[in-house]
Amino acid sequence: MLKRMLVGGLLLALAVGCKPSATQKVGVISSFTGSEQAFGSQHERGYTLALEDINAAGGVLGKPLEIIKYDDQSKADVAVQGVSKLVDQDKVPVVIGAYASQSTLALVPAVVKRQVPLVIPTATADNVLASKSPWVFRVCAGADDIAHATAEFLKETGLPKSIAIVYENTNFGQANGGSMRTWAKTYGIPIVADEAYNAGSPSYTALLQKVKEKDPEAIYFASYLLDAVQLMKQTRQVNLNARVYTSAGTGFALPSFLTGAGKDAEYTISGQQWMRESKWPGSAKFADTVKARWGEFPSYHAVQAYVSLKIVADAVNRAGKWDPQAIRDAIATTEMLTVFGPIKFVNQQNQHPVLMTQVQQGAFQVVGPPDQATAKVILPTPPWSSRP
Image (cartoon, rainbow, N blue to C red; front, side, top):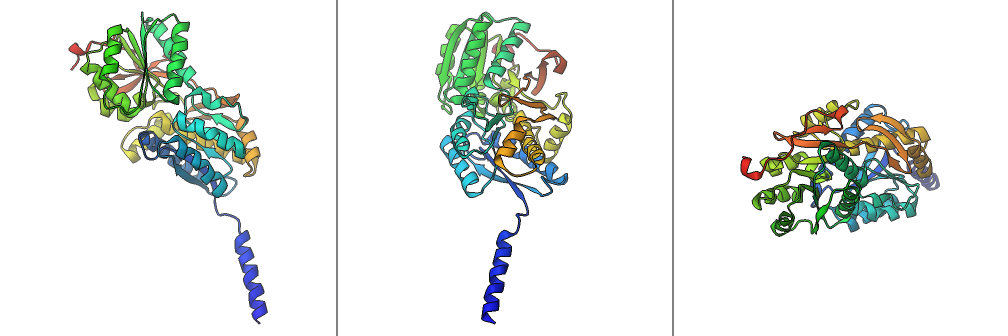
């Protein structure tokens, strides 16, 4: 009797141990806390809506999809630890992340070593693809694309006689500052100031005074949210007047920038990657859904997260199995029309167009390219002395 009980218990344990998982898991790394939390919150909203859509449509390969989230705390070293947690412990076969270029660059070797595909939703520094690894894919446009689009826009609206480049001293800032340096020279725009700063500094007035002395007609900022707000407020304080204020998007492209900088955000021009008004299917619906649930319209970072999870789900369905190499091969052949526009990877880079927006009356308006425009650009920027 005891023997039969032991055998029966063993068989039950084996049956439980061999029971297929009720869900399939994808690993996500983002900045859900820390200095870049505003962007991580946008990611979280995008992932949440994508997960709901995917599971409402039947999940992936007939099973519900589950996200295993890892908070990198806005720190590159913590992001790397996330790869170990998600891949080695949770056994996810694919990772999406991170947010910041600094963190994303740091985790690339870790995923390549483990040979699991990495889908990058947001990091713009072009060196995140420098490994040329077939395991790494980027959904967003890169720093070079944004700087090129900005320089082209300046050409179309009247090239400035000079430009200042102001960027944070991180992988993100260096990449975007360096790209504008290249394109300014290509378009023959003299660079009269080239200033890096430490993110999160208590004051930028001394730096801005240096820029003011050079009297640039244009300024190109590469900054995250908190710095973007302070830079524009302190630009007013030092009475630095440029004909055009441009940026690599990011901090200057968030809804929180509009509320944080307030009237000082007016007239700023940003490289954007998506807007509610984008002429891609579902843009307005996605934006309105986010607004209804979270109280504000999303930035493009939310859409990048949303589409990244959709790309993974589509790839697994086409691969027919949760195998890292099969998923990688399927991602490489992705061709989708999404709320973020067409998705197609060439040398691991999605071919994504860049929009140009300007803050007008407290809202982002698309001012380029012409076929996407919702308003005409207002230039030159009025001097601070004539602004409320």
